[in-house]
Each structure stands twice: as structure tokens, then as C-alpha cells.
Image 1 (spheres, rainbow, N blue to C red):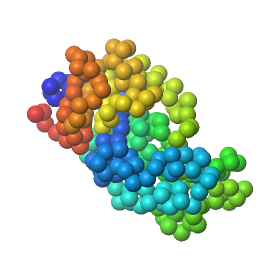
Image 2 (cartoon, helix red, strand yellow):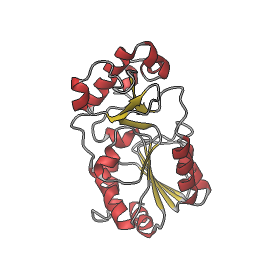
Image 3 (cartoon, rainbow, N blue to C red):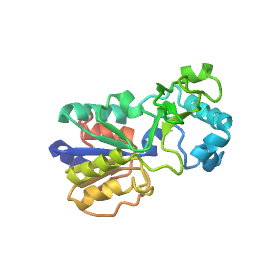
Image 4 (cartoon, one colour):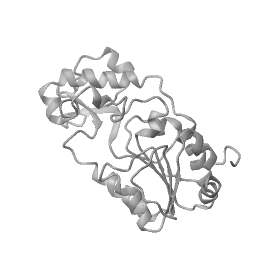
Length: 247
């Protein structure tokens, strides 16, 4: 089955990648769900919503500082670097990700659609136009909460908060890519959170082959068009990119 997947990737003309929290977890990034999930300790409606940010910005930003600090030193694993190699070989390889940690870009992927935004930047809550990189180095010395130097309003992380819509242009392009691709590699996602979960189904419905990489069962159907590889991304993606011998 793996050898078939390797051959399909080799022959693909318009490949696409779709990743979720499992991709980050392999690099040591804590996720929101699961046994080590950050949601186990906090109420998301308080700490990741516009209402929570406005009502208690200091507490919310203390939590975001903690999230950034837990990501300090986290590096892309071998699977990320395999995608960069595959991108270089194919000439282009769009990556749609549900993750906000920036690891795809850090590994060298150049066409990354972050459908839930990015935890690496922040902008003015009152939309005055100010934006800045949100690095751990900056936050270590910043007041809590950090404020906009242009208008004095509280800054917000550039992730999609509870109650906000997903960025329409990114979602629109994601579905366009899914409907046009001939192969989609789905990595580390249970395919349960909509509307993002609809992306691999859109690809499948339009005739693409799906290669899913996930140790656990997902919502994707059992089908001749779905190849399910129940191993870790860091093991499988280098194989698919031709960086290791066939097994």
C-alpha cells in the first residue's frame, strides 16, 4: 500500500496537502484536544474569543504567552522537510493547514494557507492597521496585555477566535485547490471540524486520490480512492517524497 502511495505521488501533476494538529504534535507542539490538550486546563470561550479578550485581556494574553513559550524550541520534524523536498521537485505544492504554529513556513513551504490564522503575528483589536511579529522574544519584554503603539488599543493574536468566521479568501482558494487537485495528502487530522473538514471530501468528490497519514481512524471513507496509512507523518512523508527506500 505504501509503494502504491509512493507511485501515485510520483505521478501526481497537481498535488495538494492538508494538515491538522497531529502534524504539529509529532514535533512536540501541544494541541487543543486529546490527552495533553490545552483545552483540558482552560475554557476556550474565555481564553480564545473576542469577548474574552475584551473582558479580561491580561488573563487572555498570559495564556497566549504560555502557548508561545510551550512552542519555543519546537522544530519541524522530518515530515515537514519531506514536503519541502516534494514542493521543490514538483515546482509547487500548496499546503492547507489547520495549525497556527507556523512550522510549515519554518520548514520552507512557500504556499501555505493557514485557515485558522497564525500565532506568529498580532494586530490591533480595533483594526487601526497596525501589525507586528509575535515572537517569544517580544512577549518576554512586553506588557500584559500588549498594546498597539499607534492607537493604544489591545493587540490580538492573528488566529481565528471563537465566534469569528474563517478567512473567506483562504477558504475559497482552499476549496478551489481541492476541487482541482489530482491527489491530496491528508496528514494528522481527524477530519471532523467543519468547514475545514470538507476540503478532502471536496477533492475526493472531484476525482482526486486521497492519501491519509494518521495512526488513528478518521472520518474519511474506506474506498479505492482513499489510501490510509496508519503511521506517523515523520515516517511516511519522507517515503512519499522519495527520501527513503521503498518498504
